[in-house]
Image 1 (cartoon, helix red, strand yellow):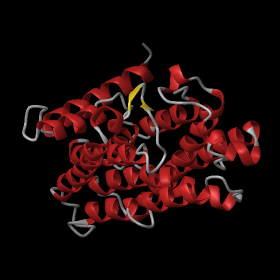
Image 2: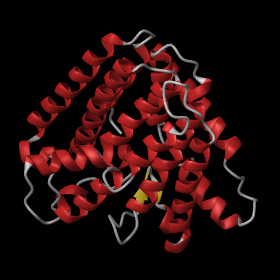
Image 3: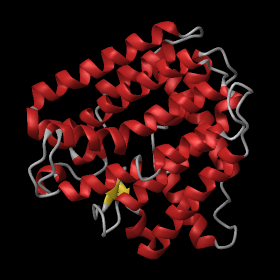
Image 4: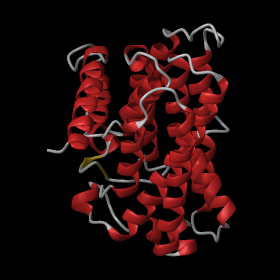
Length: 294
């Protein structure tokens, strides 16, 4: 195991342990709800958004502990979006990370409620965090709310569903990618930076990094949906094509899509130069997002 693999394994273990400590155990009433929540949270996610949050706080000279609860909030928030995204009314997916989706394992009603509970839990956790004096004390909650609301993740999901079966422009695909995926990478950086007391210049640099890496991550996901295997991805492949979704791949082809992803990574890495703390972890995460196979 190389140094990079050790880093990812260690950070994932830190986040997983914290999530296990904070989420009610499977025997806590109502048991079925907490079983569904834990089933989805511990389904094998890489914790990339949480890692970005933790790396961002260090990149501005802050303490990782101050960003742990926001990082956990990002993970349960992200899991809520996946549960709802998989529902029959949305993408109607049967597999997520190699196992039955939440609604397949626990029923639609319990899946909806598990997603609702995780969303609420995310704001319970981030609401318990106070931003340093440079920001309003509730700034972390505001950041997550803006990223997840009608002009953030939900906007991307709405436009993504509306685009199925229709010809879309590159601008529309960029909007969907930016709102549905990149926004959570961006807010992960911002929440980590805010927790670490980043000044406005540093926060802007982190925002650019998060947006660039998030876009590259989604483009890589589009490429893998076309070229990967169900075994490696843990979910159906070719679903974008079957649903006639417009992606960077369908609009530009595989080579140009990969080129766009690399451009986004290059821009993201260039933004890190102004940060006062260690930026190597953020570089590692960026390269992983570009080169991943699942």
